[in-house]
Image (tube, rainbow, N blue to C red; front, side, top):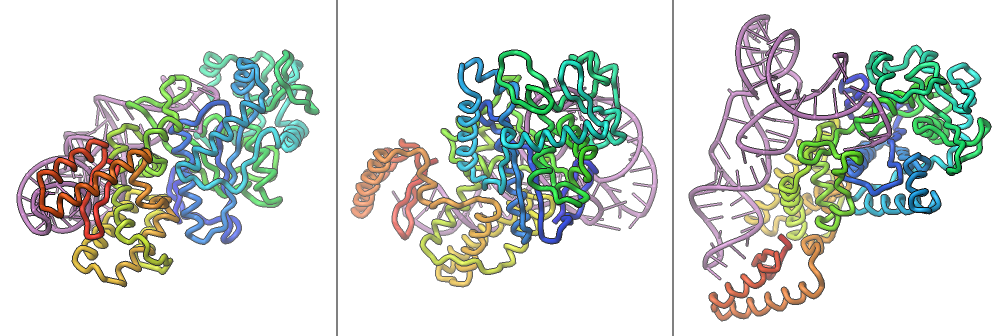
Length: 466
RNA sequence: GGUGCCAUCGCCAAGUGGUAAGGCCGCAGCCUGCAAAGCUGCUAUCCCCAGUUCAAAUCUGGGUGGCACCUCCA
């Protein structure tokens, strides 16, 4: 297994701290709004990573947090005159539902900020005790970046105070403009949490360090986790600050390997909440099967920037269709999980920093060989058995082809329409039997008008949503 | 202004020192009553310039053109 480490900027052989066991932590969503395609991409990348690790026989503990304390959540709660919990529960549930729709396996642990306050308090206290943090007269607690000689090494940055001072609204009470809040005191009426440091709420970066310490880190481990991941924009300041807190407040370095996934752009522009061009996952799921979105978002290497457009999405559908068509040809045959050369090659490709492009090329080749053999030697039992094992492995490791192949091709078609289509197909079959091709072709046009295509096979006539 | 990433066929996209994967589209053919699906065949020397090397898309230097981060962000 090889992983590109985005901090060392090189591909490294993956060696976990404890043999056969992997700890993985990924920064999850702040639950104040619907998930967009970028959230989907990130979740898919780390879903694939855990699948590949598990296929390599690693016992993976995968934690992805839910940030349910945040200024934006509080703001939304106040605007809508709702309890914070009401907001966070709603979006957490929506997130889970949408992740399920694109085939993302739930993480092993899903810690929430609201359930990790004790761990956060402990970390703040430790950093105060060791002189890495200080409390201001206003009641805020800041991390003292000057006390950490390693600060900014993670993101390979150089300190640029002058610039930062201009750009960041800096509190005069901070010792250094780069210092970041771990605890923000709150004086107004907004919802606050009680802490040994007064009422207020935690800084964003704190929760990840605290949760990792609480749920994943072994007491004497050199690294708190084997792998830490998230979107490329999190490297600075979020991960830099997390790393500083863990380095100074615990006896380990935060992570051995860092993985940062690239962005999803729309029309060449970064999709972001502030730009207002977000494509929400829930909207995409109305138009497309979740698995098509999964295939599309995973079809480009995880580190590349990804330019979303519907043309490429429909190409992704065509490619996924091919997997399902082969499944249709083998429908109803006994499952098996035999070892095959194809499975070895696929695992090797994906174990090389998740080379999905190579994996897809291998799949295309496997599909061609299987289809060709089925065309010419329909009773080739060995080929059928092997192909079924191959398809099952594609399902397990990539999550492609998990549905009933007939239902897959009926996405978005209502029961009523299905009935009508089936009636028309029966009429057409009769016309064909009577060699009345003029009539049968006319009926076919009627069927095509429903936005489906039909195909005559030895097993009968089938239709597919285009 | 600082830091970093990228530039491969009409489009999407691997490959990162050994002589250009795959997909879409297109063309030709097989199959089909005709289609659809499936199958077969065909289509690039890698942004520009210079250098290193027996050998470079892959390394180095210089251009040009995109993009990202430096502020909440997956």
